[in-house]
Image (cartoon, rainbow, N blue to C red; front, top):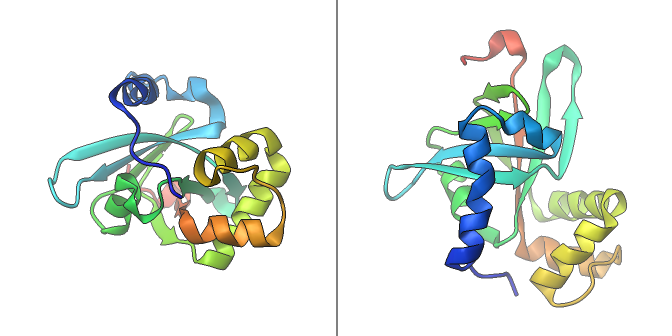
Amino acid sequence: MVKEKPGSVVAFFNRAPVALYRARLGWLLGGHFLLLTTTGRKTGRTRRTVLEVARRVDAPGGRTALWVIASRGRRTDWYANARAGGPTRVTWKARTFTPQVHALDADERAELLADYQRRHPRAAAMLGSALLGSEFTGDPGHLQRLATELRALRLEARAPNEESV
């Protein structure tokens, strides 16, 4: 049900936004994407992945929380690396921070998916089609099924004066 790793051609084009972030031009992608830098849990190598921000909340005091979805579920390398507890960094807009990483449970993932579907119906339809082989609707059963397969993280930034960057 969950999609496999992309082929080499798709992977090449997926890596293009990483080059923008490495050239300090990630802000061109706006607040809709972030660069997640993790340390490989098996290799110890630095890994960079550009991800869509599924939800964003700006809390008082300059704290920001960003939600990202691992479309390949627990087999997603960046998800497993971030959960392994190694060094993790987020570059979002023109800001870089060390996040507090929180894995979402199935109910939280279902709520995140419902919110995403309400705000981005076309993108949600493509996600459902790619992962489930059928249209992604707001049907609670459908959401629960998808939430069971996917994984998601909430990446919380500390207030700007608390960051170590």
